[in-house]
Image (tube, rainbow, N blue to C red; front, side, top):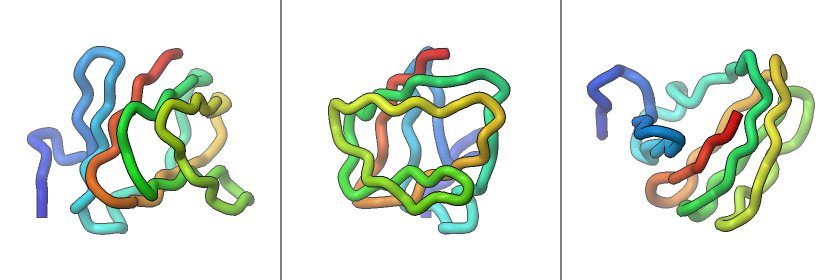
Amino acid sequence: MAETSIGKPYIDEGNTRKIIHDIETSEYEWHRDVKERKVTVKEGQGWQLQYNGELPIELIEGKEYIIPANLYHRVIPGIGDLLLKIEE
């Protein structure tokens, strides 16, 4: 099982986030962000995004997703790592 040096299931480099696929499923916690974010999927297969109270949606390479401020959400792991470009 992979571990990151910061104890989280992801690694940030500038505005790019790499979410590790082989972390315990419980590590992909529900959370919310203070600011609205636009995320663009750069790489990842079979990953899903779930907003609080909604069914998961598939994350598609090249597509942009808006994550509203203060809305609980989580990712559900797929195959391989997930690479995102994040803009606030």
